[in-house]
Image 1 (cartoon, protein in one colour):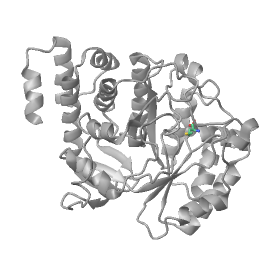
Image 2 (tube, helix red, strand yellow):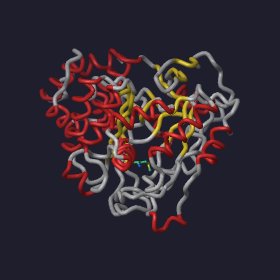
Image 3 (cartoon, rainbow, N blue to C red):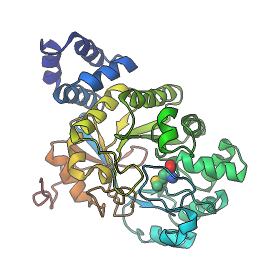
Length: 389
Ligand code: MET
């Protein structure tokens, strides 16, 4: 790929503007918001792919991370009404949704006894009666049962509500949860920070500054977190860049983010179903520009339950170096929004095969990117049978 970028830099078929940006990338210099806009507007797929892949290989070579994980979604009842959401039910219609007790959730964890999962990911609706104490008790119950399982739990949106209701500061609330077993924070609830969009798609939940403040506080307390962006609906390229710029600025200060995860808007059964979904070309552009702009984020993840596993496989040529985990059919968020992955689960063999099919190196990681196992030399039984269609 080194040669690919050199050819690109010497090509007389790209504009001077694009060439200047490519030179910056090659020389490891930060690109500006204006550069990112030029990339979105003028960058062809091969141009963006070559650059993003160059950066990906500079950072990680062919290494492509995955983990063995499962999700718990305590409830889909929610006090908020985000227009893009296909998942939530209001409390008044609670018989149409689900509310799990601590015992039920502990049983879900116990189902994995003896299995080599390393992480549980817990997010869900914002339930008016599931409070700080309830979630502290949940974390404690899980940790007591399986101390080695990393608990990545609750989005900033969920924290904002939980802490305001308990009348505690963000710092106090996080400290309480950390002392009960919280290990890190997922990236959800970020959507689009810019108020022009946020007030149209999710007016009533925490705003961009509030989301960032919760992550900043978590970083200060020593937790790592991820960040997402919901793209491909009513936002413009400028809004996407503004969003990534706020993340890049915070990351300069705290270095607490691990992974950026662009989330594609899916349009089934929600209040924005009239909006067409982004094309696969637009998706690949999004990954590539994210890799080029977010120079201080170590990892870029394609969340395959949202994108479909074969599209996720393609992102590995557009800057992505992490493909999430086995999931084990434990999340409904994107299947309810119309993803092709209706029962999202992949065996370790399937994930390894997916990565090997595109000549990358599969490496199982834990949540904090410690290496659990390198699968480079492991022959995968299912590899031959794994459909490439
Ligand atoms: N409640 C979360 C949020 O808005 C999303 C979890 S996915 C249903 O951040």
